[in-house]
Image: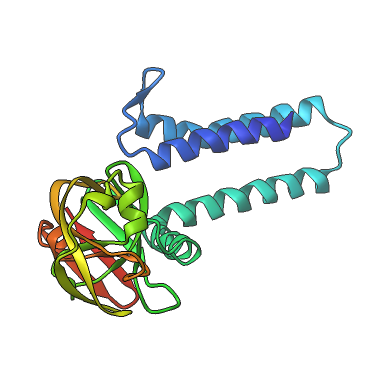
Length: 228
């Protein structure tokens, strides 16, 4: 019973800490409710003692110390929440380098550099999931033939008459217009792109025809930030 009571108090306190615009709670302001929390703690302690007199004093003190420690950790975590969010984002980015870390308020999508030194970008093209490499040296987005087919493009009807340079050497590509591109929360429509002929390209490229539509993009240390 004592543990349940403390759990409820801690939950209420955390809710007040996390929500800075919590407003009123059962007719009390946030400040008044916060002042009430210590009184509730004392009430639960005395009530617990009344209903569990057989408990040893050392056990009760140990329980109080445990909950005080947990509450202290929660307070420290809230105080340094911005730093912890940054650490969590970096860990998440290392584990899943192609997945965007989205900040909806700032309109950004952030990616971590992969172990191969490239920035892998997992996006959606015409609704299909496509993995691309960030490449400012590409004048336009370039899709592999396989990714183009995934995006619903009929590669058999394309004219591969544009010479392009790729990591595999010189090849040819066809010009297309992509209906929709989604990178994190960033969405663009009708973006110019190339489709490389079969086996001319290993991975699709996120090039300048998309990047130039952004308000900014920046590489710092091991992170890439795209801003809508």
